[in-house]
Image (cartoon, rainbow over all chains, first blue to last red; front, top):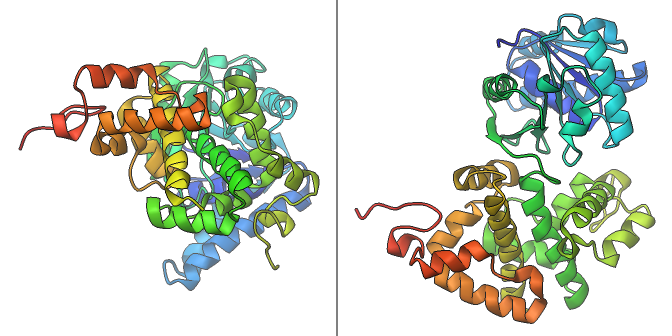
Length: 283
Length: 102
């Protein structure tokens, strides 16, 4: 199925990044959030990503305007009547996700694919909120989506082969690398990544070595582009803690978050977004 | 700080989880390594890493890690089987992936 028009629901950090990826590849994208302020903020985030490229000489100011023209901000699902591929990037809460899927099912054309950018919630459960479970799929970008090449394609229990094929092709048309992953808690990359991160948190607690020291050793010894503690700060420690809890419930003790992480979250040290996590950030 | 303990616990925790994903059919060996490079920025996928380290070496280190830190490092059954079958990785031409002799 050829994709002529797309939509992203949720204009937060991830939604804006996804809309930027789509528009930069020349496809129209409707960007929706619940109020004008949130949509405006999303539009500013997208423009900021493009402006960075202009300042690095990667695109012209005219190209920036052309790309921005492909993004249509809205607060209404009425603009979804001719969308072929919709991606939701709303908060990781099943009730919210299901409500969004029910709306998408109502407003998008019958043949449209409805995708979720969730990193840990059940695709099959979201699909059950629609009349077209065969056309619901996980389409999981990695943070920041404008940079990271991977998209995990996760079929739910009832997702059709045609939907999977469309999703793989669409990801490629966005110049991403799609990998098909069987549905399970955490899917593939976050499951493997979190197994490593929880082990580092345990090491941090046992050894009293600082996050900075640990990040330094791993960058050097394993060649990581970014230390895992800094990565956790960027993802948001509340998000990391939630994902760890989901994984612990599914797989057991190896994903149990040590007390340090819980305490940081309780004290609202959530990482970059709150100004402090494992590291301190100046605004 | 024991740097070797740190690096090994990180690398082996990810490797064991990747093995579990493979055993459960979550993705193919090729896709697991591709995803960990493209999605997590690893220089080398965990399964390719084990093939170059040698499965017998990996298995021995996992046994000592599980003795020290508990069952989360228990060697996956598929790994024991690979060592029994002499699928040790690059050095025997076959591990998670196949290697030609040239």
